[in-house]
Image 1 (cartoon, rainbow over the protein chains, first blue to last red):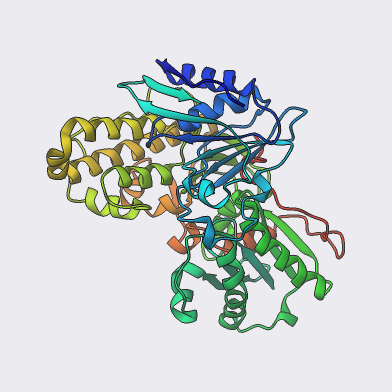
Image 2 (cartoon, each protein chain N blue to C red):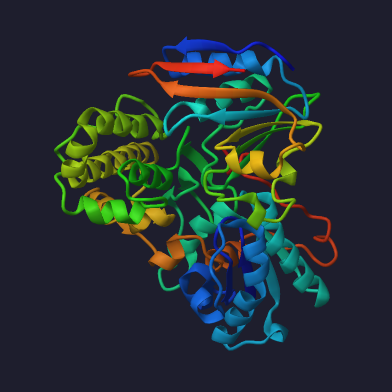
Length: 146
Length: 331
């Protein structure tokens, strides 16, 4: 996918969710979306909006502690996976199939703090989009999608 | 005698518990096993569980003074958690049970946290209100019986309470995870120094900590590096107060809604002194199990197994684990 990068300013968490939902409409099974941005920038909020649009009904919460969450999604997808690799120093120290259950042809996968995955899984991930979120004061965020 | 295994997140755990809820052993890898078996703790996840599981099981049996022949039920955490991590413990437990044709109980991790209160010596009897607050979960449940389907009254919509502690610590330069370090620093600070959001305006029984995290980030930025350094203890104390108030506010609402007179607290955040102090003010009977029963452990899984329908051999061989997000307690 070669959409040109665009930058959007959102004024609330709800707007950030809507932007995630918009992006979801362009995704299909096997796609991986990488998200960057510091603490509280709205990465999980953005994923929540996208997951809702993909048919997830469960509460979409932060995956930091468990590293990965997996949600049932609407057909033709089976799953929406949400990973946070912050706590993983490097995938090199882990089993090669550690994240296997969170990737696949019927899964759309969102990865926060993706550095470890990009290094180790380079070439095997089908990165559809990169989303960068930044604080812009109060509830405002500047979100760049490329 | 029940042998239970728990590998849903970082810790590799095994325990032996009697059918009537007496803990014979409760081994947690991060608490001592590393020293005994050597080895540096790698970052996390499945490889570490693979290395530690057998020694942890051996130690659980040793400490309990029982042999595998005396085990009549094997149990393991089925979910929620990280799939690769869960699979290590779940598969090993199934194999152990199958080799001896024993029955097997597949336990929900959150049912486990609630069931910690069913263990001796406390043996809390339902009905009661339960608050589970850990790094991965924050929820309120109306516990009417011992079974795996308590009524979920509220849960976090974004970050877990323990995660809010850890991420606050990260913003204050205390490292990650630094929830315990934040609590220590908070003791030297003024909890009234800064105003942080507690979600008081958000009605209902769900929790939200994402806004609080952002409020701390902005405050740290406003203050600048030097001022932040000077006010770190005040920031920690005020931030902790906001988390504690956010939790107790919803506990109060839930107590009103359910007319419960007893409150059980589980999860690692239950060890927080400020939270305990605030909950003690609520005027209800408070049950907080020992710290090693609040954080992830296998004794609570064994306890929950007593109230989970066990499967006979070979019915459990095809059972699979479930990931976080996939399933939760009954809403």
